[in-house]
Each structure stands twice: as C-alpha cells, then as structure tokens.
Length: 336
Image (cartoon, rainbow, N blue to C red; front, side, top):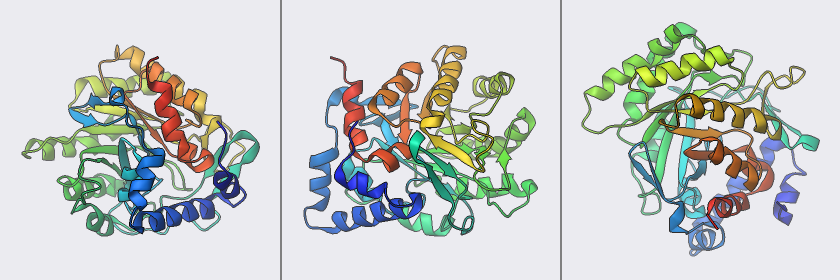
C-alpha cells in the first residue's frame, strides 16, 4: 500500500508529534463548512456488504479505531465522518494521568513498528464524559466503545474499584466495554493472567449490568504474550460467564525483549493473528472477537478477519500508513 505525500511527511517526524499533528489537522478540517462532507467523500467506505451485526449491535462496517488513537474522544465527529465502523475511546481511567515522560513512543522504521512506553496518558473520566454525554448528528449512529484501564500510580488492590467506577459512569453513554487486562505500556505492568484475578475484576461489572434496563456487552482485552494455558483460561471464562467477547491483542513485551516497551505494528502482526485464530478455533467461532494489533496493510486486515475476527480495530496501521488504510482495507473484505 503506497503512502500519500502527507503520510510520508508525517513519518519524518517523531511518532508522538506526528500523531498530534494528524489529530490537530483532522480537527481543523472537521470545523470547515464542508469539512466532514469532504472526509466522508474521500475516505469513507459505503458498500452495504460491509454491514454486520456483532454482539447485538449493528456496525456499518467491521473496521474501527482501537483505544489509544483518540483516547479522550476529542475527534469522534471527524473519525465518524472518515467512515470507521466504530471508535473505541480510552483507556479511560478515573482521574487524569500524564503518562510517562516524553519521548514515550518510538518508531522502529525499518520494521514499520512502534515501541510504546506511554503509560496511558488520559484527561480522566470527567473530561471524557463531557465528550460522550451528548451525541452530535455526526456521531448519532457511530458505535462507541469504552476501553477501561488502570491508573498507573494506584495500587493493584484498588483496580476493581477503579474499573467499576468508570464502568458505572460510562454505562449509559457508550455501546460496549472493553476491560483492558493488558496495561503494559509503563514500568508498572498490569497484565492479569489468573482466573481469580480476572473474575474479581469483571464480576462486579456483571452484577451492575444485571440491574440496568439496557444491555452493554463486556469484552476482555488480552496480551499477546499469554501462553496457550493462559489463553485457555481466558476462553474458559468467556464460555462460562456472561462475558460477551474478546479483544485480541494489546502490545507485546515478549516479541523483542531488547525493546523497553510494548511493541505494536508489523512486528506484532503474526502473533496477533495467531492468537485470534487460536481463540476462534477453540470456541468454534461462536463468540465475537475484535482483532487488533499489527494490521498495517489491507492484506493484514483480510487475514485477521479470515482468522476469526468479527471486527478489526486499527491504531498503528493508521499512524504509520494513513487513513487510506480504512478504504483499502474495506475493499479487501468485499467479495468479488
């Protein structure tokens, strides 16, 4: 997939300033009188064959934005105009946190990958609520997911309380939740592996949901570094509890132990597809999977869907190869 001149320019900049510039310009275009129309006209896929129903929700197409791309929900109008099937905000945490000191994102240029040491910078729950409480005409039909993460500075014993606070406050404003149990982009790792730890985190969410009039699907976002035995534990939880699906995968700490951070991008592609295929085969494709991690080309998107993903969520692929990846990826999924 050829990069545009603008994307080629962005890749000359360091990873984080490059993304900030993209989001700034996207916001400027969105404020122009015909800006959102132009974005929709140029980038949005429109083929009705792409529509699908997943965990009871209608998606206009299966290609969305993963958490971390627009963590605070500042560009929902513009991302909707671009034509993404869904946007996952977050990771959402109870209070603002600055993340780790810059530089916290680094490119591995020759391998089209990114090393992430960001520590999930966030403006916090109250700010994000101000962005999602009132849908605009542009986002009225946008499927919105909320990825819940852990405050880096807080003690692990407070995790359940923190996650539940975000879950309760965001419940009526988003369409589904992703419980991130692979918070691995800072020196204080939080990667849950045991059934006991995971159940302590998600059972209070199930209990809260039982008392609500509206049903919000709950998924787990998992690490690519889990062993087969640990993946089997996740699958057992999926089958035996009211969990609605899995999002696989977050960044990897194991793919290149010499890199001090979570790796995403092309170095993650094969492992991400392998994990999705493993879960899909073990569950006989009876449960939804959001495939994320390592999708840098239209072919990667197609392979992820063929491996068993119901939806795919992009982040590094857009950062490194541009928003044209959405339209080109959509074309790869349309049956000839």
